Image (cartoon, rainbow over all chains, first blue to last red; front, side, top):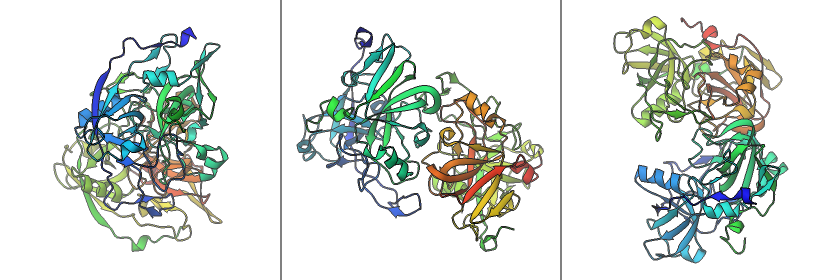
Amino acid sequence: MSDLAFEMGGLVEMAVTGQVSQPAMRPNGYAHWPDGRADVLPGMYGITYNARVGDRAFGWAGDHVEPGVSIANAEEKADFALHYLTCIGNEATVVSGLAKGARGVVTGEHARILVDFDADVLDLMTIGDTVQIRTVGRGIRLAAYPMLEFKKTSPALARAYGLLEENGQVICPVAMELPARIMGSGAELNAEFVDQDLMSGDRALMADLGIDQMRLGDLIAIRDVDHRFGRSFRPGWVAICLCIHGDSIMTGHGPGILTLITGPAEKLGFTVDTGANIAHTLNIRGDA
Amino acid sequence: MLSTNAADLVAVSVAGHIAHPGFPGLPAEPYRLAADGTPFLLPTYGGIVYNVSVGDPAFGWFADCIHPGVSIRQADDMKNRGLNVYACLGNTARVMTGAAAGATGVVTGKSGRFSEQVICHFPKQDRLRMAVGDQIVIRAEGVGMALTDHPAVRLKGLSAALLGKMALREGQGRLDVGVTASIPPHLIGAGLGLTSEGGSIHLQTTDRDLVARLGLDRLRLGDIVALEDTDSRMNHGYLRGAMAIGVVCATDGPRAGYGPGIALIMTAPGGELGSYPDPGANIADLLGLIP
């Protein structure tokens, strides 16, 4: 196990803050199904009371459902710091409002940072409350595997991965595997920023492959992609990712898949374990 | 002869100004990162491109998704959206201000998120007299066009002028389009999930060996290509049996997820649209563009 020791001693811990966001919509409010049918659906921004990490990713009457509390910083550069420094598993604290002092955990990064709090805390929170995150994790690496790149991996998440080592290869437990050909929206972004949606428009394929059983917080593996600097098709590489938001009705969209680890397949593998969900492995929910 | 409603379409003006090149790629300005993380500094979209034209190779330039010819935009986002959506491939563009006033060209492409420009071809001689900021007006006609006998086939940003020049084969409930190449779904990248009523979708070229093996590195700007298993009725996305047809409108580039940009012109979800190999399927040749 010694080769799986993470280098953590030099990590710098810094505070970043964001405010609980107010849901926002386009002028006509509509999102469209692939055949053009229009719907008005909730899901993004704000406080989501009844969708939490560990819950299903599919089947909500919502679009891009962001579990828990979605926070953002109104100042653009400060918001980039909130995005680029925050790691999954970082601790969050409410620092204003009725819920002041309540603790939460970062569970995702969409256009906003997604933070999980207990249900009784959500009842005390309001739009505009400030949440502070104690960020730590940027720069984390496995000394024995410098070719593996870790993104947004807090020390807590590094432990929660439950990594194994077999014949010189790091093995990460994941809840399921996705084929590279269905990775969609987000291909245009850098891989340090938010997620890439899996494309769920082929509903029969979702059912055939069991993808529709995905849960928010599931660890996900994708073969034949390189997620170091952007997310592109490249045989012989692997990405280990996290399901951060729910399904979408829109073509080219679907549950959000955020990059956590990427590297060459001979050094990075995975094993399927349906328990590989951060609600459980980060001890966020006792019931998940 | 393909039956359409072209006679009922309304022609309207949309205008843009020749765009100035920019480097929007924060936070690493002015560098961008190649798929392997190497920083690079190369010309990118926008402006007057003197020596790259529709009909030229899409690969091999020291550039990042450059637009051939002249790129135009509106400063105001709403107006720019009107320009980007209404302009159709094959529409006539006319220079209205500056030393090249009166020169006529053709809309040959569009660019996507982070640039949102309309790409026009003008002969190289005319480009020499143009300046950044010159106004170009497009006689926009094509939005709303439908194929009477192929209701499942949606047309996007396509003019009747270009449609009429394309190599098409009509079958039973099916339309096949002559294309120079077919792109498999795992090589479709940036643009997925974004609108198909404007902008572009990109062939992704990180895997250079595969791109060469499929012959995609021989694509030319202006080539008509097929996107396999791609449903572009609303946004662009994966669907087995669907097909999208587009025109290569920007060059290759080094960034992950990117490669030649493709302006979408046709799509159908369930096998109503197909393709067949046609080495001559390039709009520079079909429209007889003057180099």
